Picture 1 (cartoon, rainbow, N blue to C red):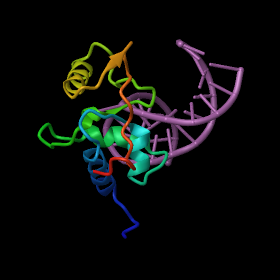
Picture 2: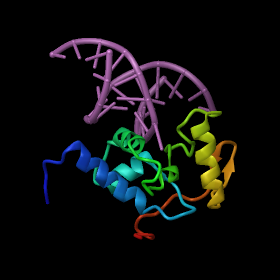
Picture 3: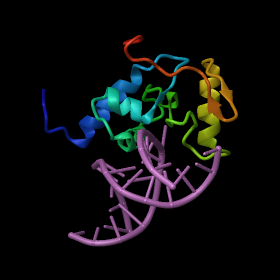
Picture 4: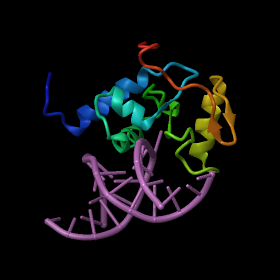
Length: 110
DNA sequence: CTGGTGACCATTA
DNA sequence: TTAATGGCCACCA
């Protein structure tokens, strides 16, 4: 495998990982980083998602903070959109926190 | 080059 | 429970 990964390649790897998250499930930025083979690089995940085009098909909304909270400030359009998309998939919230179980990459490889 | 910023996170207090 | 701290590091002025 290639070792000298460019930032673009790392982004691609992150997007591929996010694509694996099943509908109705959520994963944290750090979790995505781990699965993508980039432990400790949670911030890179957020950066990679910010580069996505609207029609990318990557389910960016299934990625939330480790605390179970949406990372966009409450009240923003981004925040409302992400929450709406998740609720449409059956993800439940309680007190601004996701209570639906996290994605388990081992149990749900695809 | 330096310094600030941030869709983060685990730890500590 | 919240707040501060240190680590992470790509990107930008």
